[in-house]
Length: 343
Image (cartoon, rainbow, N blue to C red):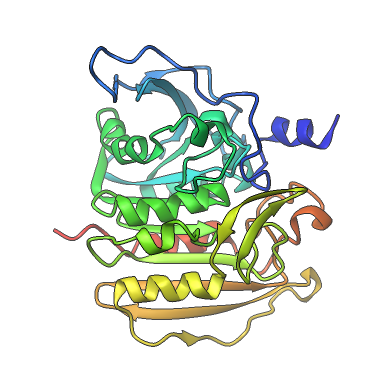
């Protein structure tokens, strides 16, 4: 099995930050007459790109809905306890992956958190295995087709709320790589829907950074590796094997840009932590407090294009090291859960 086929089978391809995708993650459907954004009710489906991870007692379920001329598939995990309204966490896969693979990449950690704390977790599938995150120089299906992922992800919480008891003031987004860049776009252009975001292995693109003007301070958690061979810590071209996929700011510049947008005070750094010496990584947390917000950067020293304590989907020569220093699932949730949309 080739490397690419292996990765597609696992749906763990955040490193292929938008390879030209031959397989689409959503089939086109005829749009309604005169309606650019066709929407139908959420329905059961077996067409999700990949199966979800079976690391919990109960599995996530596959659903579908129609939006913008496409049938969009997604996996949803609902907590076992009754009640609500619950927070909603939207978890976005990397380019070349799928929602089920993202559930696997995170070792179903968000599903376990959902059962413990009570939240709904959704793992959407991008069209062509990718997201239209605002970079215009990508050769992905989502960009070539002009897929309205921003509109879809803005509408998704309301569409899910028709089926599940969701608190609209506690909607959050996280994601890796292409999914992380899409999370930034939601913070910029959907701050009235998403209370806070947590991109992983992703910096602001040079195209989105100057255009980003959210109407309020948005809490942002950034987790980036200093040895990421794909999303460069120091900024510049995103490089996937022999291809480039747009340019990004450095991780420190991304942190600084969000501090400026949120009107934060000076940044401060915690002491370096190396709790697992043999994993060849450590981390420093940089924090900046703002009025009603916070911007935080986890600098994972020696970390790669990976999810800390997540699945090591490829060897370190290709994607870098997976840090064992902290559980990214728990860090992301502990940050996001503190915030809700202002009234």
